[in-house]
Amino acid sequence: MIEDLLKYDTELFLYLNNLGSSSWDNLWLIITAELTFVPLYAILLYLIYKKFGLKTLLIVAVVIALMITFTDQTTNAFKRGFQRLRPCGEPSIADQVRFIAVRCGKYGFFSGHASNSMAAAIFAGLMLKPYYKYLMIILIGWSLIVAYSRIYVGVHYPLDLLCGLTFGVIAGTLFYFLAQYLLKRYARN
Image 1: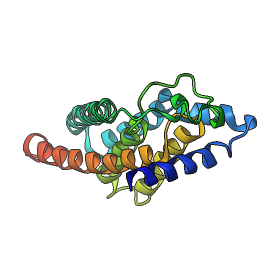
Image 2 (image 1 turned 90 degrees about the vertical axis):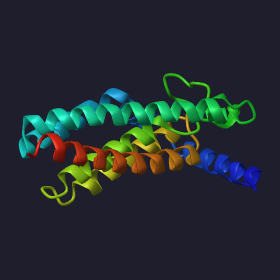
Image 3 (image 1 turned 120 degrees about the horizontal axis):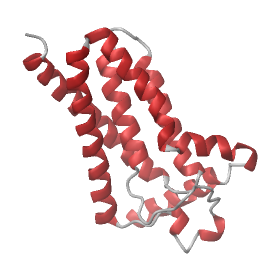
Image 4 (image 1 turned 30 degrees about the horizontal axis):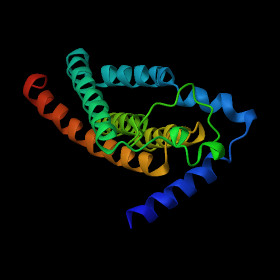
């Protein structure tokens, strides 16, 4: 059963990856670059500051740093534990992969880009939901685009992304509740 699932995952990856074209490569390389996230996250932090004030912003910034560290390190632990080669490093399909990323990396299960972007989307969406009705939908949409970029550039299978996105939802929700607890205790006296 696992072998069948991985086979279908590989087939879906190859199909989606090979939909790319050189005219779109630069756009997807920009989307997948980690520094691309910085302006969006700066805006989200500003919105949190604007709606809640400096004390809340400082607590939230610490919680976000903990959340990103947690998702990133958990992702790395899974990668080392499962040791599933990235598609760009898998010899059996190397000649079929459209690899355009800057580097390949060794293991890919599960995606740190997907988990971190989704955790941030859920966390910020929940924090700002009372003020910006559609923000969560926009942020989840952005996270899905980021996740797809990992297939496009050739470094992750769809299951890597699905698991990363799911983990991001869990982490974003848990750290939102941690932030609410800390805010209730230290910022909203």
